[in-house]
Length: 277
Image 1 (tube, rainbow, N blue to C red):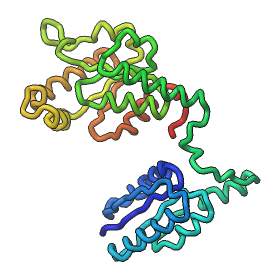
Image 2 (image 1 turned 90 degrees about the vertical axis):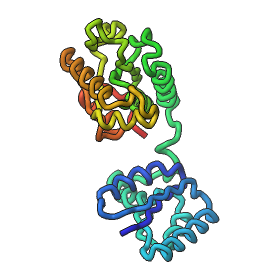
Image 3 (image 1 turned 60 degrees about the vertical axis):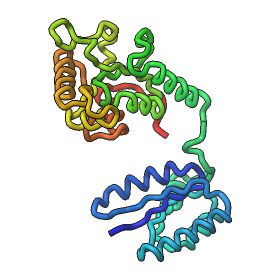
């Protein structure tokens, strides 16, 4: 069964899409084409979108699913005319909250993802810059300013996790790649000298060797770097280092960057500078 879902907003559409995807992910037996429609902020745009939704209903032979976070009542009235199963996030949740809080909502477009507090916004910017400046062991002399230092073999997810931690939580995350340069004369991986003073900040990432080989092969096909033997050796040595040095770590193979980040925060007790947006 194939269905179409529209995530509609008069703002960025991030809230509608995030909630919509979370809800629809529970229905694994249904193939769903998901379409995000942000900034539907005029009656003309709403009417044009209704025509698209109606045409989709005819083409699919099933009514589309419509999940919206539209604030403007006039625009919501237009969207309600579309042929589809409608989930109006604001009317579903805001009305009961208004009753409970005994006050009216401001019904303001884009409040969730606006800049908001200047301090929070600047924290986000500074944290992202820090993650970029300290990517891949670029500036080890700044590790005293890091909240966490992610370590792991090349292509195990360090960079996207660092950036996600910065953007979503304001956490200053550096990352360091474990390479052959960190082996001793016997070929054993040792804790790099630049990381030793910051051992309490270290968090390790590991990954299934087969998955790692597939990822590396996309970047450097048929190379020693992407060979199964090389990947197995690197992963085994990294995990051995984590265990011997009591560095907490997580297997990233089957986790999204969101899951890696939140599990890491839960395991380490890191403080978030702000809540995710």
